[in-house]
Length: 626
Image (cartoon, rainbow, N blue to C red; front, side):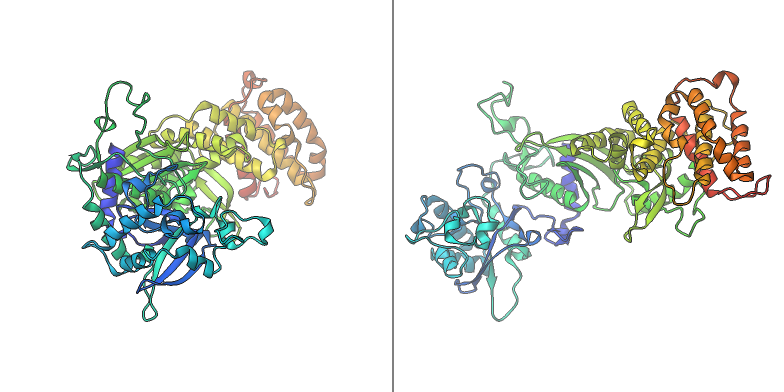
């Protein structure tokens, strides 16, 4: 129950945000839902006057505006199939239209249940003017008639409502195009119009929220011990759905199969397993919905969420170092902003993390939650950790400063390349290991497997590192941009275990590292000899995959192919030849063999190539490295 308690405490700490409309990057609105409220996608908006008459109706074509905050009861929030359980105010046409049967409808019960429930609210001490205006209009039973007059709904030759549009009637009207299936399932939301003053939309009015909450509290009963809060409160067995979006039917808590094997013979009732109060369930689920909209990452319906109970911003475990800190080593031009050593970057990154920690209280804790559903009705917690903020930030700093390398695949808002030093995101690791066409199922699976590596300090699974290494060692099978991205991410994963710096280590005599350096020199050697407009792969790149498996034999082929370019470059070619001799001389006699190379050769390759392309100094023959 700890994750439910932390969500409940998050709601308590952010109650001032209840009902306040926020927007995502795509301008879709969301809010921290009040208790006894949910969201629904509306198809039709009906305005009534303050004295209870029809004023105006329109079809909602903008999906961003269609999501509507509506009051709900326990029964209505979990209704399914043919069960009759009306929402208290906004609902489907079959529920809210009193003249539905008069225009061809077959059942009258939905409206009778709906209007009775709405009447109880409108006539209660907790009612307000808007509820009474809507009730006064709907009890006249003329909604279908008014919508026909307004040109929203249409009748056939027999004066009956056209439930599904047929091409024989002509072009399909907006509502029939918007609603999937029959028009009786069109969801209608109501608001009140005044010619004298501007009234807040009903679904955005805090007074409406408070009115229904107070009214519905009178109908709650059956107090029991709440396993979340530890208090005796009205309990519930019906818990919220629509967790990931307004169309999500999966529930985290459910036990509706009393005739099967749900209880496995251990209990006679579901509440004997655990009793959760209505208030705790509502607040925890509403906080979860709010957090997912605000800062959750969803991949193929799998939710990755990191939050702090106070609602303060915390860095996510799924993002890369640039997203978390925006440390751009080339922010001030061509010269790096920070030295590319793990120690230097660790200091810079730790400073950025201190900025996050300073906003959190001493007792703050960080929650990491992963959710997914195997079926349309059941959702599960796949991963959950609650960590003290010091432990969380310590592990995060360790990950981003040990799984670090220089990356060049990011772009800014102006679509200009950005270089950053640090750890890649878990999603980019998935693409590096399995390719950019990897399915969402594969990506979300890898992201889940990487979480313990970041949060708990476990080793990166060997198959992930090997897969990235294999793809990075085969550049001819990839486009140049894809290979460069895969190469830097593979180096980061390998460096997590090796602990090398990006800066070239000229004293390193490791066999694999030296072979990587030789390959990089051969690549830059040939590239400098080619014409500026010639973009073909060098022999070093073409033979890279074979080189990783049979380095001694393949190196002979690569070195032989360099002879014509040495003649073309002249004295500059002599410099590269001398550099090859210098590196090769560090290889021990017994190490010059065809034993396959480990991932260290990629670290040597990247560091040597970076050094040759970036560092400018005059060498012994008076030439400049390029």
